[in-house]
Image 1: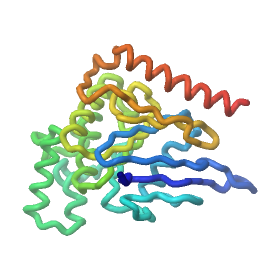
Image 2 (image 1 turned 180 degrees about the horizontal axis):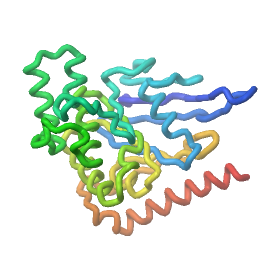
Image 3 (image 1 turned 90 degrees about the vertical axis):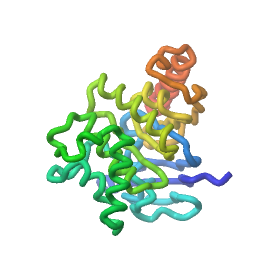
Image 4 (image 1 turned 180 degrees about the vertical axis):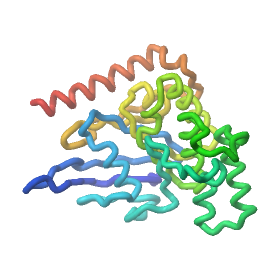
Length: 258
């Protein structure tokens, strides 16, 4: 089966004083249709840089990103992006924020309204359609940001530490929300996170990156099945996976120190 999204022999360097700083080195990974995949790594592993390259926001130094076998050379509607900061238009209502992309696509007003209403319902914010972002909690703002990305109907949703700015209780609530949303929409999702519990709870596979430069340290299948709740985090198998990932990242730090 052909992968939906592929990262092939990816290398990224940035200018640094009189030399080049190698940030990502020979990254190869695949994302299949309908998967939820997380990428974890310590600070300096280049996680966000990798996601930005996958989104077409910055170019690779060498290697390629392919979506359904076609090279990704810039941002486009097939790749949706959700950031840690909500990046909502503060002067627009929730509904208008969600409908921004479809309006830019040139959809007629009834089609825009239908899509907005659908995604308002998906993220549970229909009663807040006419609210402004300043009237929402942090968790609600992030749900609007996710709905806005989904309203463009991308093939892949890319998420960069989407819950990193939230308190622990809201973060767990959004994790459950995200799992339900994924099951409901069958959307292909790639998420960057430093939270191992979050990565294991949400994902079918997790890639662990080493640091300085970022390299694929391991690919871990998450065999938890689809019926997950917050109690899953106390399951012995979940704890085993977390220990395995923590040891891998610890080894990666030792590799760097050595």
